[in-house]
Image (cartoon, rainbow over all chains, first blue to last red):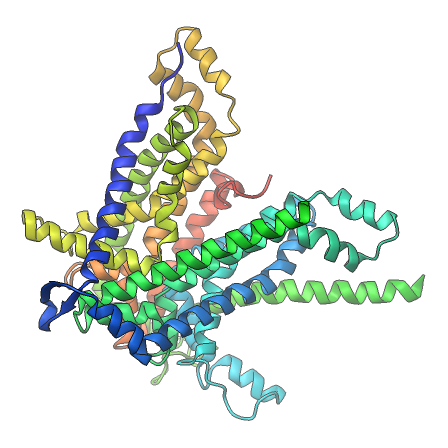
Length: 282
Length: 279
């Protein structure tokens, strides 16, 4: 007799798919109704909110800003985390895993507490500015709080450990012997890295970049707290539209746009990578 | 040879400095919070390093921080437990059930990770409004409502970590147990479960952490009376900054690192790493 596990799928499938379908249908549906005052809605099905989105520079700027910040965070995350992941993966395994676990442990701390720390560090008379002025790099305190730069640093802090974890597990699967073989044949180290290691870790880089991009596109806490009400990314605008303005229809439209942009960019990247790999294989 | 060794040493120093800077970036914000919490001066908030050492803020932590912390802890445990049970069921069925369309189902289970969290929060708010309008079930501002949404966003983690381990467990072990006369439940308890337990622990740990740290989903679903700790802290930082937040954050940090230390001590480093990495 074979063990039959199939029926076990039913409770989780009903729970997850049921909620997924219900929530997605609801917010997409509500995005087609115009907001009246005080959270009430018009009962005619129309495109008014979408027209408002694509004709109002406020919303379009917000979308552009959100995509730019998210892309920047993904690229910066790759640049910062790749060298660290490489060093950790090529260390004696005990050390590498311990250092990796240390970084992952830091990501377990609630983001709100980390942002509190960043606000202190970035403060006009905070330790960062004091040090920079003492060394003489800047004359006046630089204000990262309430700027795009501050939000980017906050999102980087929020996402970079995930990037490190993903890149580490990819680089670890690339056998060291590849580097050794190439070096024995006289190839320079950077050349081996450029021609062998980097291409082999490309799928992991794209995967990590996409995960970080998705996280940043939906990230609310860092943008709201470090932006200080001045950096209006779409998640911040959505929260205000729901909780302050109680315009649920418009919030539905904004949510639909964010979701659509995220899905489109993910799809495009996956297609691009499979194209690249197919070209390489041919 | 010396001409080649020097640049190499220099290169190593640069690489080591880069890695060190990375870890400073990760931990400096935490160190700063702990340091500033011990500052008791008049205009004391946000002073690092502290200018007047004092425990004053620790005595002034408002009670609502402890109340909301209790809510968040309960919510995290419930989310981890429910996601744990549902996640093991899903992972077992997907790996062993020979289900038609298993790939599609796996993608459906992963979907909550791809939806921006702010969208999930807003969408659940709409669902709960509808539920209370249709059936009079008040889910907004209730523990049940928060728990349902948290299980939804944390379930993919348990399925992911458990499925990853199940792929490495040989199904013939289970078949052997059954052909030797063990019942299916006994086979699960004595053969399958012990083998996949590390993955379940890792997934449940991630579920707890995602639930405990969540702001965007909980912010929409928590009422004005009933809220979670990170949301309370968010409003505390955004609206009326009270330096007692620093003291409370320090307590949370100490608790978190004690818990992380216990996890790696008793369950191993791989539980922290979610079994995705390490050997």
